[in-house]
Amino acid sequence: WPLRPCLPALSYASAFVVRQTSFLLANTVPAGGAFAVAVQYATLADVGIATAPATAAITLTALWNLLIMVALPVLGAAALLVGHGPQLRWLVAAGVGFAGIAALAFLLRVVLRDEVAARNVGAWFERVASRVLRAVGSSRRPQLRDRLVAVRAAMVGVLRTRPVALTISSFSIHFLQFAILFVAIRALQQDPAAPSVTAAEVFASVAFARLATFVPLTPNGLGTVDAGLTALLVAFGAGGDEALAAVLVWRVATTLPQVAIGSGTFLYWRHRLATATARRDDAISGEGRDNP
Figure 1 (cartoon, one colour):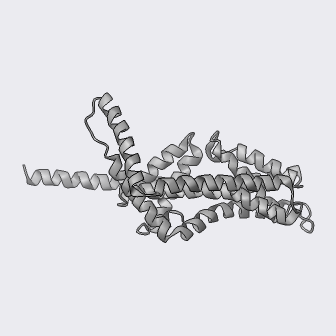
Figure 2 (cartoon, helix red, strand yellow):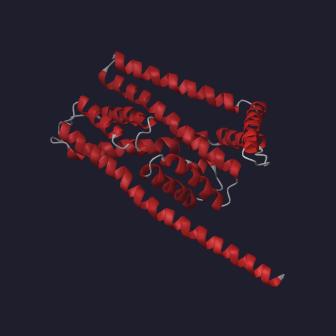
């Protein structure tokens, strides 16, 4: 969903292939995030998306995901303040979240402030890259200045015309994470008439536990997020077995289906790429025979 506001010309089917294939790599391979970004570029190029809008889309979706992850603890703390009344720890958590949002918004404003700033930053990176290329014996010029200006223009265009769609689509992914855990813990609780944790407490647990993904020890925070999420649910009053079972159901339901789908989209993309390459090679061979 988040790719569609950034690339309106991209079909949903193509966006689905891009996101599911990158999810597979990001969540099954150590340091898979880097591989996932590379595959996003390759799959977008395969459907005709130029480098500048592709870079803008990949950057914006990653940045908006980061903003949502920082904003979620603020919303979680607010929900707890409504349900439990003012408590210092929730006020502190909300304040830290607001500070993080302000810092990210300031950095975004600096980067996108004007074209001159983007051109100057691009020129600096271009000089550094040129020196590195000369050091390894290459005379190629990277042209980073013009590319950064084009990326900035694409990002500004999205933020001016479709920021709401980008925000809603990015938030929906995290909301579904909460919804799956909430359903799991309600289904597994021993006494449905007396729930051990409220919806606000489950939401806050997801919001705070997801921050563990900022420390990339494992793909998608596997293990670290789960341990933190279980501990938070227990701290809010859930039984240990109930919390652990719900978190395991949540992890399986949010990972295995997408990994299976991502495996299929990866194979589909590779097959389509191989077919296109074979056709191109045949066309070149045919031209060679016609023009000896």
